[in-house]
Amino acid sequence: MIDYAFKRGDIVYLKSGGPAMTISEIQYCRKEIPGWLYNTSVLTSYIDLLACHWFDKNNHAQCKWFAPCAVTYVDPE
Image 1 (cartoon, one colour):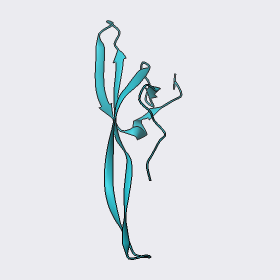
Image 2: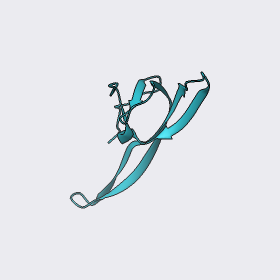
Image 3: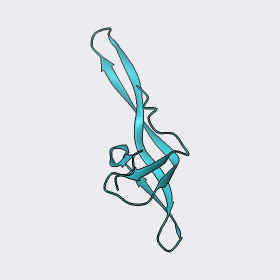
């Protein structure tokens, strides 16, 4: 199953707080899951990491990779 929750260009926040960040790149992970029911395997994809850009307090551009579980669309502050 492909996780389409996040897209490039989306504005997100760290759940722990901080500035607004823009998703610039999405790294997917593909995993083959053996199928016991039909004797076939299933290839699944999901979001593994998000590259996010933001400006710090000194107006310098920053970029880091975050796990999808660490970010949210809602500003926690």
